[in-house]
Image (cartoon, rainbow, N blue to C red):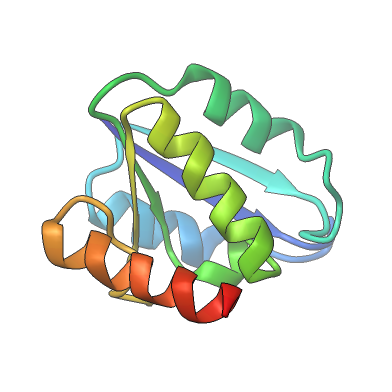
Length: 115
C-alpha cells in the first residue's frame, strides 16, 4: 500500500500542492497535518507509523515536510524499517528504501551524518 504524508507548519498554510503530488503517484491513503515539524508530537505521523504494515511504502513530497533534522529522519526511517515498510521522497531521490540503490544511498548519507 502507498501511504502519503503531507504536512505544513501552520493552520494558514495550504496542503494542496503536496496532496496533488501524492495523488499523482497513486497513494492509497494520505495523512495530513498542520503542525510545526519541530514538534515531537505529531498525531497524524504517529497514527501513520502505528498503522504501517509489511510492504507499505510511505511517500512524501519532499523531505522538509517529513523531518527537520537528519537525526529525526534516521529515527523515523528506522521506525518504518522496523515495520518492514519503506519510504520514498518524490523530490529527494536519494530517500528511497524501496530499491537496493536507494538503501545504499540512504546508508551512505546516514554514515556521513554520523561521522
